[in-house]
Length: 340
Ligand code: NAD
Image 1: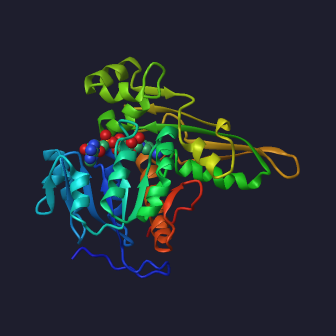
Image 2: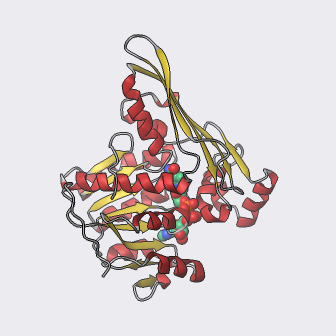
Image 3: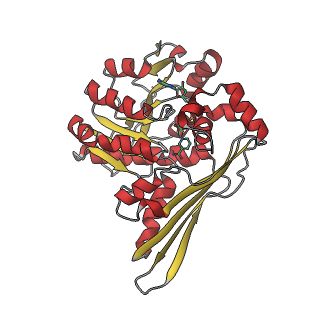
């Protein structure tokens, strides 16, 4: 038996049945994060080539083995299905899933908005969480806020690290001030090889001068490799179009022009090239100008800082959904709940 029992005082008597869409770097890390949790059971996973669903919970290590040796979680016996339309087929089968973490590439830039429209059209009700990065991608979701609400979906957007954990930290830190002057996010990411996070690296390349999302999407692996060879594996990113800005603006904290995001990604070394931090500068009610700084521990990986918050927001989203609160919410307006 794989069904986990839980007793808590959060009105969540049964483990939350979660699905992970996208089973690459983040999707697999997400499965590892959920595996030991008693409040959540991973019942579904999907990638480009197939999906797996089991009401009793997926065996995570066997799912990794299927993905790594045969290229898709759809090869997971006996619960996998091979298909080129995994998300559509998963939804068509009406499986019981309370919430999905969308660990999908947002390539092209409207991919996640289009997947969301598929969820709306399917009649499924539940919680969706993304770790989407671009401002324009969140704006596409804002456009379908009313449809999400009417469909009975509680959609939590921007719930990774940045946007996500750091945006939420900025929202919390803002409380000390009467007026916010600047929010400055600086991230450092270290990964051993870029192939483990292809979509993340392609999306980052899309922010570099002379590149676009579409250019990065259509680059072959060899072209990405050649670019990384030129930069010694390091990507330096400045003034990125990151949704932390629209999220903090929507939460009524600061105008988007005052939010900046940049960072350094080393694709050849798991050690972070710099400490990820967010600095929130403002004026207190007494007239003092000050800066709060929230710095992530250097030992924490990108995957830990994305997947932990994503499930924390998924749990919060389930509570909101149970209370009939549907529509679109961001990581800057809701506290994530710790998943046990
Ligand atoms: P990846 O390239 O490692 O994996 C992508 C996965 O999606 C693969 O399993 C692939 O098969 C699957 N996929 C692709 N098209 C699909 C489709 N049509 N249907 C079903 N599955 C499909 O990706 P990654 O590096 O893990 O990145 C995932 C996302 O996470 C990216 O959009 C990235 O920007 C985002 N991200 C966010 C943050 C944050 O802090 N907010 C940080 C890192 C990454």
